[in-house]
Image 1: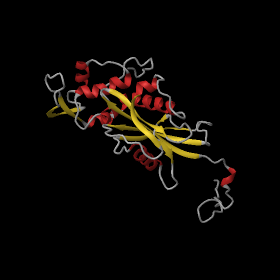
Image 2: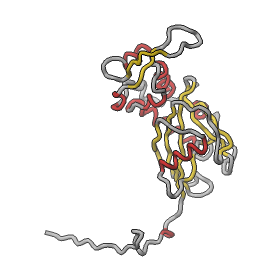
Image 3: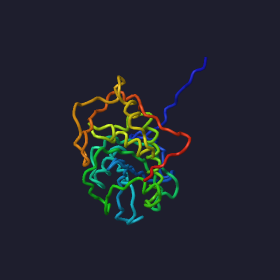
Image 4: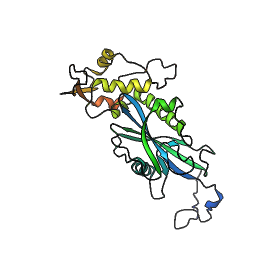
Length: 260
């Protein structure tokens, strides 16, 4: 039998080893960047801010900034959302990737933690902090190269969109894009906008209705559209969305792009 003897390391009162020298390691900063996605007029939009300071002054970017020492990453993301865009109350706010390629920021070595935020309704967008302007922009205009973004933000937005495309099949994230009550057409528009496809309305309805509990009728109807006709029924999300999604993407073997 072998006996293992643990020899304690001498430490300072702060908990770090007494001979630890932080200057022996390269310094870098940590930022948070937030991709804010929402549906508007049946199209997928991203919220962008126009940079008011160098570098990339005057260019569009996703909201973000440096993490402060006393903050957690989540706290920093929420603060940057409020300071740069006046946005509060995202239905989804979660980390999805880190970016630390050398040279991604011309000021210094910066590692950014990217967040995905989903908003049901954006309301009035007001630029603040070091942002000169803020606006909702169709994702298709950015993905098609019509709008250039600062830093590596175009890559980050693309990765966020691809993450949502995948999550639509695995989670209930589709319901985060619609209100607490919604029509089936509004929910279908989320899938169509994200995947760049047209889904058959009757088949979509059959996939959601039934005893599985995906959607629950509220007994209410939406306001009639400008063309009149029968008002659409309003539903709320059921508990089944916690375990997945009833809608699966078609043509998995090719990359879908969000198009006009």
